[in-house]
Image 1 (tube, one colour):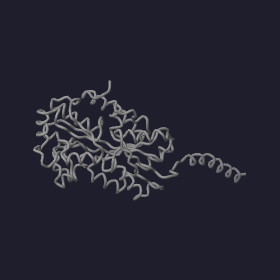
Image 2 (cartoon, helix red, strand yellow; image 1 turned 90 degrees about the horizontal axis):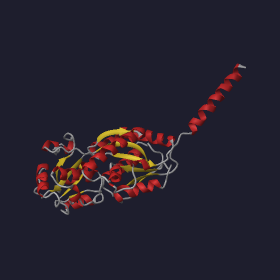
Image 3 (cartoon, helix red, strand yellow; image 1 turned 90 degrees about the vertical axis):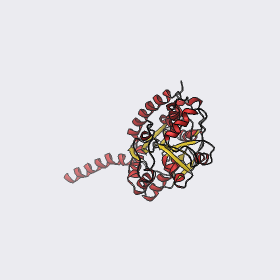
Image 4 (cartoon, one colour; image 1 turned 135 degrees about the vertical axis):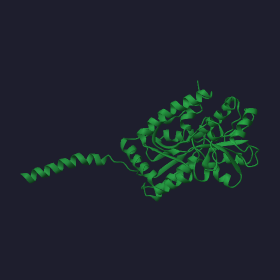
Length: 324
């Protein structure tokens, strides 16, 4: 009788545990990481760093492909995700643009149309000019903007994005109207080409994007919009704050998936992405690109995005860029 009772107890435990195990999810086909900008952009480098880390550390058991779908400041790639609800094999690298373009009316999709999975970290923005430019500092830039706030051209990679917002802040600080300024947009690597070729007077993008062209002698970085001076190869570049200009702007990077993912699917990616930021390959990428490491899993990332939406809405409204 005791043996029979023990067998029944074991069977009962199996009955309870088995359904829980059956709920676990893992990829059944290739993973695709979509990038809303062209090759060479910070989002593109982030996606390829994820791909490399997952392969190097064997964090994902299926092949991983990075696909560039530029257009609409990332809206084209986000639209692809909306066509595959519940498919956890499709990911998208996102930035504050997913929030700001919706606020400015330049985009129809926002983070709530997706499943936010993780915040990966922050990068700070910078302003650069051609090496031959007479502008040698952020103070020089502001003096020039005060004289020519609406004719001095500053290139960015997306209208309504964080780069655009920082440019608007510079123009507003100089006394100009951001809505009247010359702020042409370029896709990915085209922005660097425009800056180096003199097609614009200056460019705004993440500091790590500019660094190789500073080292090659083609560009000069005037200032970084960080709260304090960065380290490593960017330690020689002063912040805007150091030059008397109170502008701090970061460009965070995150990962999202289509809407309607199940709890086991989200749990799978929470596990993979938590392991990703601890992997040597990812840490090397973060160090090389002067990221400010900041990881948030899915649930906390959603709260972060809600707070970010309020912050960006207030900032863009102050600059006259928020839709009415």
